[in-house]
Length: 300
Image (cartoon, rainbow, N blue to C red):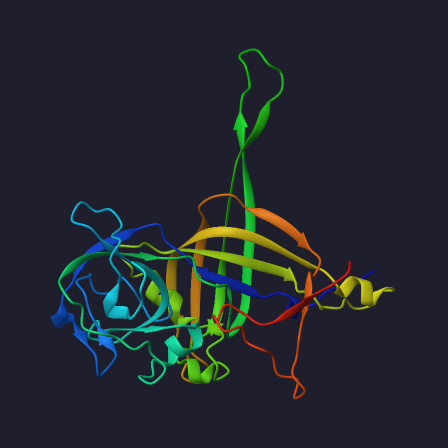
């Protein structure tokens, strides 16, 4: 009988929201030398690492045919990762890791806009990243039972109702990308503390809750090679409902996160579709758009 350890489980977190904000881009909002700009949005609306779609609008709210010139593009819209400083200033980046670090030299070069114009800003669905520093997590699903017993029936009769789910996550608290591998490729537990405070966008996120990772081998299995080549996970959209911190003078600082699902809960079985292509030093090859790493399809 095969036995899996809890180390086979991970969480892949995806930032998401459906809200759209409108504001105004003014030449005075752009600091070209610092590669930094700002626009009017409530504090906490966007946080470092968010993937924003920014579009230039006409006066009637339709998409303009004029370029989004402050970002140095010839198109009226664009998609960037952002770093948001404590004063609400924003820098644009081509990849997520650079956005977490927030360096000036790696930020997108900006230009002064030729005129004042309206913009629309939307938090696009981000790229899934593993949640780092997990100590443990739980996930549960529940189906309501609806009582349809009729008058005079001798036994209770029930039918299946709607499905709901939820769970909790315990993480070692961390907020600096430099501590999380140095490359910023893991989502930090501190993000969930920021997420619950978002008044305008809400605390929604998407996640893949892995029961078994691709490559995880069970104990006492007769076919470990075959068993390792598959992944099993829950796919959910959820809301953060509670975030707490456990303080112990003799122990590590722990983040405690509770969540509930808001839509479909799917249990997915996924054999791997590709292997990562590695360099001679065994390092991965990053794609130029920052969306992931180069991989080769498998013949399965």
